[in-house]
Image 1 (cartoon, rainbow, N blue to C red):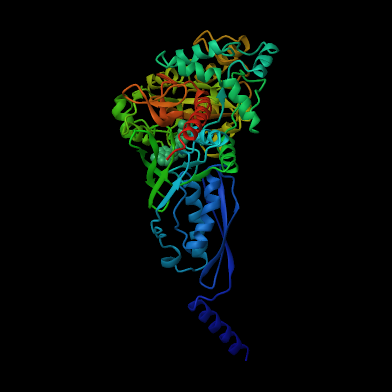
Image 2 (tube, rainbow, N blue to C red; image 1 turned 90 degrees about the vertical axis):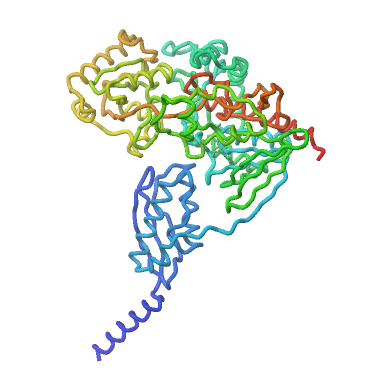
Length: 578
Ligand code: ADP
């Protein structure tokens, strides 16, 4: 009897499996994402995926978070683990897909069905009308969109990637400021701070010198004069941008990814529409040659048409268009780029097609400290907070805090054309962005001893120790007799543990681009402004000249983005006749 019952159970189980009707069970798998391990739970049974949950992760808010939100929904809807990844968050997407595939295999799911590639959706065309269309959802585009909405215009933002943020979302989000009363108050009570660059004149001069004096001084002066007001404006929008008393106080500490997520939310709250995965391919003009919308492709590869009364180009630079970079600057042939994949210069090409002029196109910046294997940049803040650069002989070779191009060239002059960036725990603790580099594995450590640091660098311990001791002495004396460091001497490196990254220059910023005036009107090759066409941010040229100073990119985007929002709204509302 007992034997017959168990036979019945076995038969029932085999039948349910063959028919695909086994009960729903939960399966778990963990895969490495971008900054963390990602664990997914998948409910599978009755031959269907009934739920997908990301149960633990520490991915980047504003980047990986988009994949965490989107992928489970896509997998559930399409009933396959191999759904489209979220462009811009591919490492996170890949980990979720791998985790779900693993769970499905554990469940014995038929992978020819549940592991098939997702089908492309049928193309759907879309057409919209608005006052202002903004191309690009980075800092400049979202700022312009918000300000245009405040000016009473209806606004549509088109962004070709699946996530907003462009290169901005990868930055620390800090910006330089001059002559802000809070900044001056900090300087008045703290002798330790370098007293330069707090006046408009000093900051203009610093930016011009940094840019090899080829910058458009009118644009620079406008940007610098607006640096304090834009800081107050950002505060009025609820962004937390206070000066910190222990830095040099020439910049507002980064609002980081909060800048993009915060500005995007404000655009939507104000009634703006953001079309993601939607690419602009050309700028429309009317019979008078005025810009009046864009044509492109929708998220389903259908035809996209946005009719507008004004167009703001905020597509960022072309640092990821290596063909264009190498052609304009052949000495950078072979350099990697730390830019996001969308930084391909589309806005420049589209605007040139309707007559726009460009300036300084061959002025392309290599950031000195890019981790080559991952193409991730380690912020200036590492050196500004006290980090030093050593060559493979364990020696310093440059003032670490000088202009980017000088540091980058100095690294390329070293035997191996790379260097080691060295910091300690106190520096890691001083800046949340720096701590993130440890999570993604580009900053190695903690190293408890100088011997361990030297071993990582494959350098002679005695040389490294000598460099350390000399440097700590310079900090104590606030004077670097070797390279005349412009460091603010806020901390030395005597206390470990230490962290280290191998770095070399990588394409970072394209200073050249569309020619604009201080109203952000795009200037044609004829010298006249193109009616209805405005531009802001990295897509423009002239602000940074031959070399962009750290902390000026976000300032550029905020100041000129806001102006582009104002100018485009005023233009659109004054051209209300169709
Ligand atoms: P900025 O710092 O000047 O704001 P970002 O690089 O942060 O520049 O942002 C520019 C944005 O423009 C990116 O998100 C990029 O994907 C987007 N973009 C670039 N080309 C196009 C295009 N043809 N259509 C829509 N969006 C685009």
